[in-house]
Image (tube, rainbow over all chains, first blue to last red; front, side):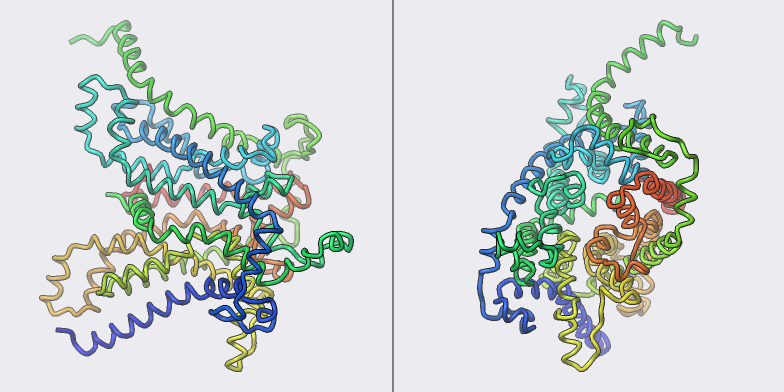
Length: 294
Length: 309
């Protein structure tokens, strides 16, 4: 039986948590509404959570006239290459490091090597100079190689590998299988949940990363989607335009419009958000495995 | 039994090497990439002690000792930048623990599992949005014409210049950061709460404890280790106040309270092309962060029995 106090608390709790979660959604809904409203209702301050004078013209404009689609292609390219590299390296590093010291004597040295790279870094300028010296400026490799080894993924995978019973592996080794065969034939098929989680983390990370795209590219046509959004959509001010630029392309004057910026934001975030509720399970499994361990 | 002879030891070493060779080969590509993209930049930190000019090679530079550090620490804005970084970072760390823990405890009291899952899905959502897009959202929502100030005006309140008022800006950063991260950060605490032994609740109920007393005397003590662990591991972040967020939301109007080490280094290094002084600041930040992170790991190992590897 619930007491009266518990009922009051339950009502309060449901209401409070509902309000909090609506506060999480409200800013996004506001931007969504703005992006589908006419420029006039936006400027008159009439739009809250529902579009006013519904129109898709902001989207048509973003898709037709701006470089959004080429930027999206760069993002897809970095995801495809980056994901393959991230996954391969994560598995190849996590597997040997998941062995104990008796099996792999040099483990401690490697652990120290990777751990130090995680807690200390050369910082912005020296890293930039290295990328520049390697001739990677304006190339896709500058966006996938520097973070090819993600220690967070490695830790996640390592903890998962450790949870796999040793006896399975010992049986395979007895039967004459090598380490690589054991990894590919036994460990990987058993590791689907954490491989799924790492895949998703890698995709989201590559999708959302923008700073490397900004500093490692001299030419705006190489920008990935988030850098494009940051540079062309959010920072854009009509006052920065020279008169001759404006005369050549009058449509540029529209870019400052809040509706158009909102459409840009929606186009750059929606693809991830649409799939996320279906994949939530894997994300959550991933983070729980990575941070809580026995 | 006699000790193994030199020859025998050599043989066993060869056997071991052959057995472990696949491990070394597996690690090789990762090691190479980490050397090139992490360790070589660390060596590049020596330009903090040079008057670096991009025209010459790394070792063909004028050495200036600690001149760059003297220059940085004599800049009138620098103490302010350190203060802003600490202020914003510490508030974020504190709020980033209190809010998710509270939310997880409240969420745990929701009996209807479907509704619980819907709430979770919604509050996890902001985690997946890049700060670039979120900055775009907040720049609009929190502007003078934005929905928040429109609502404030509608109820007869003064509008607040969330991103342009230097007094308000740091708090705007903390609140928007909590907004983005709290939902996702509840995952760890929810997992910990789920792991609490049901027997403990039953025992507490037998002793006459209600839900509130059970939370206070069973749940919170049970998840205290993970709360402590998360706090300890966040020590390393006190000099990292959130570049992605602040860079995309600040403006010269709020430099006095909103400029942090990372944004300062960016403007100094990339925009003003003062490579050496910018690297000096970066080195200072890296060293202090390194010490704090190691301290955190040591504390975590000592008091929570948690090892990172």
